[in-house]
Length: 210
Image (cartoon, one colour):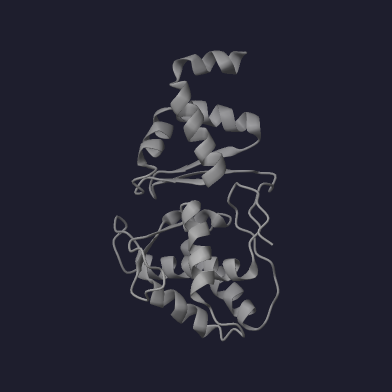
C-alpha cells in the first residue's frame, strides 16, 4: 500500500506506459524522437521508477552522459537469446560504434552506412554470405530495442545510413571502451574461425529467437 500511495503523486497513465516501454523495448534514448519524452519523464520521476523496478527485481540504469536509460536484472535473467547471425551483427555494430566514436565529438551521432556492415562481415570470411533479408530482419530487431535507427528507408541500399545509439554498449556488462573494443574483436575472430559460441545480449526482455 505504501508504494501505491506514493504513486498518487505521479501521472499514472504516462508512468504505466513508460514503464511498459522499458520492459518491452529495453532502452530509452534521449536522441531518439520516439523516446525523448519518455527519457525526460523518467528523469523527472526517477525515484518512482527506481522503486517500481526494485519491486520487480530490476535496477534502473541511467547514463545521462550518454543519453541512455535501461533496466538490468542483477540475477542475469530476462535476456534475449539471439541467433548466431544476429549475435555477429550485434558485435559488428558495437565494433563500428567504438571505432566511429573515436573520430567524432562526444555530442555527435555515430552514423555508418550499410556497406560498412557488409565490409566487417566479409572480413570474417564466413561460409555463408550475408543476404539482404537477414540483414533487414536483424536490423529491425535491433531497431525495436533502440540500439540503432536507419535514416534511409531502403536497407538493401549499401549507402543507407544507420545511427548506432550508445545503448549498443550496454548490451553487455559495463566495461571501458577499450575493453569492449577488444572483447568485440575477440568474439568476431572466434566466429571467423568457426566458433559456435552462443551470444546473449544483456537487454531486459526475454525472447527465444532460435
